[in-house]
Each structure stands twice: as structure tokens, then as C-alpha cells.
Picture 1 (tube, rainbow, N blue to C red):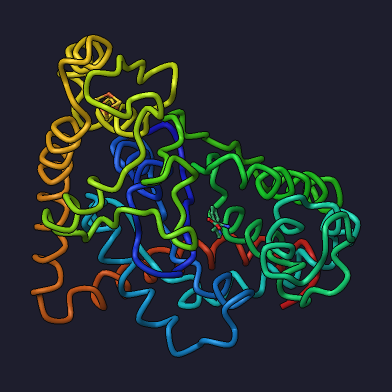
Picture 2 (tube, rainbow, N blue to C red):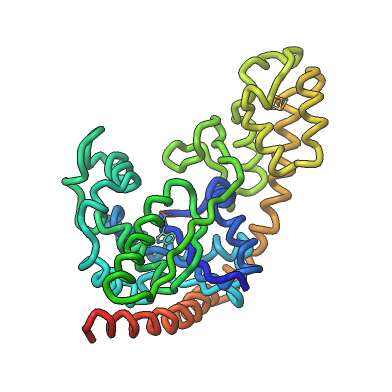
Length: 334
Ligand code: TRP
Ligand code: SF4
């Protein structure tokens, strides 16, 4: 055992390949070596989705199914909903006592989120956002430190939050005596998976392939993918690597043993984009089939998702409770 990991995602709808490559693929590997807690951050979802509470519960269920479909093993990993372990809220409150507001106001990820939501303009300070959103990283610090996790697998955008968790841990340790380990981010090293149009894969841009997309849908979507812009006709010579052809990048990930041949044939213009996409669609469908089988299996078992969440919460709660006893004692409260 290398140590302990806490990882989490907000339940904001079904996952796409970009989410899988950016996080889940890594988590599934990490479960072999680490003790893992995989959380569904439903309170964090409310920081922005508080006007749509009716969707949260359904999305939690979806996310459990996506975790299982990706290959997380609930016997090994504690899969649980944040709101089932109320201790996170208590630790968030206690951490808020020792967290200076400037640490939050300068957080670039929160700034970006507030900008995306239209709450603040370019270059504006985060003054007009809800208290919960400002405290988002404090809650995230509580999520991590309550398990005294040493590592957190995250994407680049989450690094400021991990840094804050480290600062809070340091401050707590300074004020009340060494207690929390300082968690390290584990950055995913895979290249960012572009969307169908070559931009970042994102639901709001409508350029995603969902983990639940069936082969027919995958094929239709792959057909619309952008390619090397200089290959207008089949006889145009390609340079997929240099010109960043998204189809080529996908082949690298899902069809790696053919990649050298594809590059050669594309450069020599003996392989056309239509055929190249057809082959990719097949490989993608092959990759997604076992994922979708696992999902269907889990869905078919009556009450299984609830059982996974209940068992995960029980394991998480017992660890969280242990940490809280130490925290309460050090901070002089019950
Ligand atoms: N902020 C994370 C995201 O948007 C989700 C999250 C909440 C998280 N709590 C966490 C991630 C704790 C890692 C650790 O993806
Ligand atoms: Fe991209 Fe394939 Fe077309 Fe080459 S043949 S430009 S790799 S889609």
C-alpha cells in the first residue's frame, strides 16, 4: 500500500470520454495500489446547481453507474455520496474559522467558474458570488483532509484547490499541533482528449462522446470529426501529427498498434479520412462495449447502486468520524 487517495467528481450529468481520460482511467489504475475513497460531490454540485435540486439525486445515481462502468471495484474502493457523510460539513465549518478570506478570493478556479456562470466580468473580483461557491475549496479541503489522504488525482484546474488544502492543513497543524498530512496532487499525464471539433471536450460545447453512446451514435459522431485541415481531397498529402488531426489523436489512444501505419498512409494520401474515421469508430465501439456491459449489469441488479452507496458511506463515515474526534478535541469543541 502506497497510501490513501481521495478523489471526487460533481454529479452534473453523464460522463464523456474526456472525463474518462482525464480522471477515471487513472483512478481505475490507482485502485490497485492505493486505499481509495471515491466521492460523489453532491454538495459541491449545489454550489452552482442549487436551482435544479430535482436533478441532483438522479445525477448521483448516474455517476455511481459511470464509476462502476469505468471499472472501479466497490469492494476495494469506497464509493459514496458526500452528503451521506455529514462530518464533511462539520470539518468545513471548523476549517472556515482558520481560513483567511483572501486565500479564497484569489483562487483562479473559482474566478473562472464565476465568470463562466456570468456572475462576474473579466478581471472583476469574486464579490458577487454566493458564500457557498466562495467556500467551495474549503469544503474540498475538508473532503480530502477528513480521510487524511496523502494524494488526490486531479486535473490541472484543481491544483489551486489542492494547494489550499495543503495551506489549511499547515495552518491547522501550526495552530493545534501536527495532525493532517499535506496531500499531493497526482496529475493525469495523458494528453487532453479533444472534442469532435478539436476544441476541449465539453458538454456545453456539444462536442462530446458519452461513455454510454452506442456504436451507431459513436459512428455518427466520429463522421463529423475535424481532421487535418489541409486534406480536403483524398489525394492531398496529410500531416496528422503536426496539424493536430483529432482523429489521429484518438487513434493514438484507442488504436495504438495501427498508429504508425495510419500516419504513413495519411502522409502518402493512400488512406482517406472517411475510411480512417470508420476504423476509429470500430475501435471506439470495442473500447466502450465492456464499459457499457458493466453499466448494464449494475443497472439490472435491483437496489445495487443504493447498496454500493450505503456500504461506501459506512466505510467513509467510520474514517471521517475518527478524524473528527481528533479535530474536535484540538479545537476545544464537542
Ligand atoms: N472540485 C472537483 C471537480 O470539480 C470535485 C471535488 C470535490 C473533488 N471534492 C473533491 C476532487 C475532493 C478531488 C478531491 O472536479
Ligand atoms: Fe486525420 Fe486520418 Fe484524415 Fe489523416 S486520414 S487527416 S489521420 S482523419
